[in-house]
Image 1 (tube, rainbow, N blue to C red):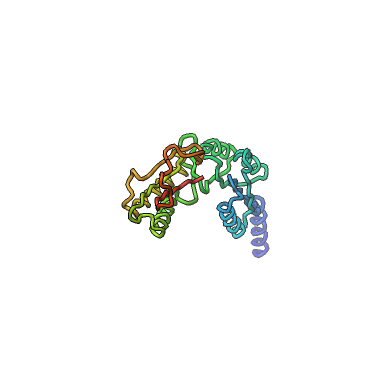
Image 2: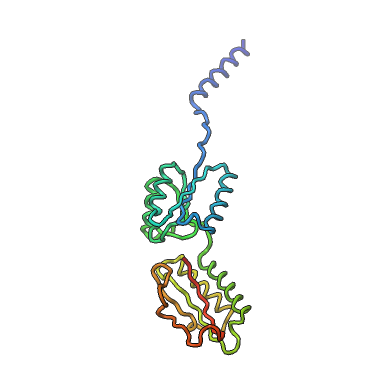
Length: 234
């Protein structure tokens, strides 16, 4: 009798628990989107391959969205990402000035967003979470490599005049900070280079059309051993 009463009590408790405790549903599969300014470029192809591999390892669906050809902006890419139901957004903007708008749109949609290559800020000038290469340090690595090349090619042999031309975009950190890194490393490895040996040509798009106004061809020409090392990032 006692055993029957105990079993009835256990059954009642389990029955109550079945109504009180919700059933644990399987978590929906996550879907991450990568919206990139130039997804056909070898640099970004390698990045995308890495993202795809990690997403597969973690069981996450992946969407790659191209913001090219020119005219198809990052906003169009974001709309496509939204239509495909992505849960999170990785982005390389077509231009850093688009940062506040891109972040606002992601926040409106309640989609977390990180940048991969080019850093961006929101409308309050607060930096967005970023995973990628540190910009200045990337320039430093390039500067060390360029200095090594200059030494190997004998740029500083007696009688040579060496100038370094940097085509900058001073308003765009992803470009400007790299030129700063290049100069820092070049002067570290080649102390004979003074500030006056750097010709900095600012630009709006990373291109200087025609003959750069701050750089004139030496009348003797390069065949006499004069050297001009350039850096352009775009």
